[in-house]
Length: 199
Image (cartoon, rainbow, N blue to C red):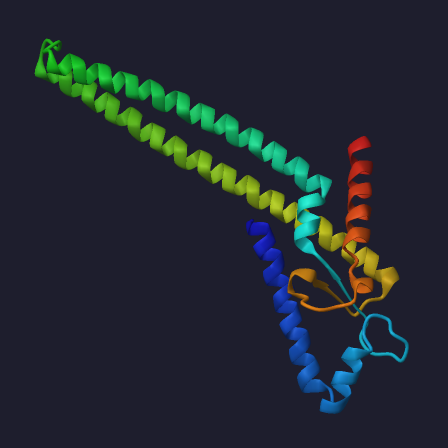
């Protein structure tokens, strides 16, 4: 989800910069005409395409594989934490029961056991924080990898296609479907990814 937000934010920023440049550098009558002549329509102007980044994220095989790996790690971390937490809770319940029935020979021994359990609880809380941090780092790394692959491919793609701008389709309200390159990009990204899996 964060990766999608990052992509959307970057694309929005680029779109605002483009509009700003168009507005303040072109003549007011010519700017509208140039935008209307976009997407390769004869007569010049800007050549603009868009992709639906959310569709790419949902259907990109790399994204699916990274999500599956992340889910496995998340489940393993949850199991590790759950096992340690459950063990601690059993020990704490046994301590409480022993304390209530006067099972400790001295008060000092009861205090030592309580302190040991408090230390164990702090270790478990620290483990929870560490595992949550690791998962967040893995998620960020995955998002960066997907975005990097998408941007690398779009740069290569655009060398041949020659678009002035490739926008995120989430922000396109009305536009010709001929300028939607999502399926083309997704197909190529998946083909490229499948090649790397077999190498």
